Image (cartoon, rainbow over all chains, first blue to last red):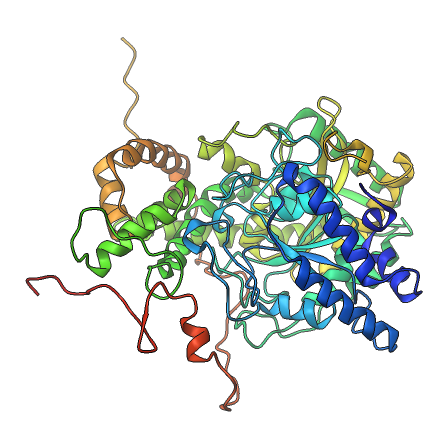
Length: 508
Length: 107
């Protein structure tokens, strides 16, 4: 059952806690009950920590009773993607190779959640090592889209997005290497933000591609994303790539945007991210949303980013290259799975390594490790890895030119709505195309958000609109995102996502 | 008779995939090779165009923001205890990671 406690936004819950209208124990229990009732169908969680969450909730209630709230969100529960290290809680990255591993330390973002008083409900499902766009590559079974349980919730962070969409958690953390926060947001009718590269610490995030990975908020509203962004963002001395500058005031930007006034804001529609290859209903809802921005006073221009057409190819060389190096650490020696090869007496360390990595990694992980090994091998390095790095420069230049003409850029987040489970599982290329609009931001390090833009007329499934801003201008995403959200909700008469629209099995 | 489509420049062979898996320390059996090799060929074909995109004078970018070396004050701070460091190990002996033999018989 949803209750007012599970359907409220995090901002509303924070207000109710501050006003003494509810307690953290009460609302943490309400979300645990909701998980219990619906996660058999959705499978958003790999691990639920009821006892730990309730302990943290009790401590939060005591702090509030003493008038010592640790933050605005003190007592509001949160779910955490299983790629972030949590001391004392299993962290598997959706992989057999880390089954049962319990980290001895917290990721910086997890430590910040705890310091701000947010009870951690559990760890959410994901494509193995964040490699995928459907969460079907999890070794522990797929997550299902709460709108239609026969469809994918996006990926790699399908668990976090589905948890928020199914009202199992008001807030969640995700990670985005090529779209893993934004694309699940789009196909589940929720909000997802990839902050500026370096804006949020990666310490304790199990790396796929260091130069692309970024942690960010997964929520139902733009303001909630800003509130969570503020808690986890900012400089971290434990991450050498962390930006040593304050997080822009994203919460103020979200509140300002909610007025719906965009007078003087220049919005650039990216020519290359739309049209052919985009589902008609996705394009239609996107075009309508752009019209709304015009109505709110924004000045809309078309911008060309010709190198974006090569972004997917560059990404699928750079990312596997970095991933193949990163995943070398899973060597069966210091942590994780160890498998002894069949029929070998006294196997060597190398033989154990080979057997373990064969048994412990799934197909997509193997594909990417082999691709990366190929792209980095002598004779191919210049033609592939070196060229992809040059394309990365061209994409940054395209962004520089575009942001000279526009304050923010817009596109559909994902070319299609949620597809059916199994539809693209054994066709890697078709799966990769889901990220075509989200990848350029990762290659250039710029921040991006996906906000719900409506339901596609042909299938009644959620469509996402993506906003992109220059490096360190994350506040622009929140201002324009909150404005669009307010304008659309006026049209719809409320949020896009409501419990009665979800799949019968999880509605109510 | 129509002209034969020229072979893509760098379609990866089954043997190459076997070699790469070997370099990456992954045992692949024949069934896995049959499954993965054609998929990898398709992916590589789709990214092959990259080699003609950028001119020679375009500098490569390895990272989205400029990197500088980061130092901290040289002060003692707490680390993991031996028990914590070994807690996830597949095998432990005398407060050390226990690993399979690392040398072959002939070494």
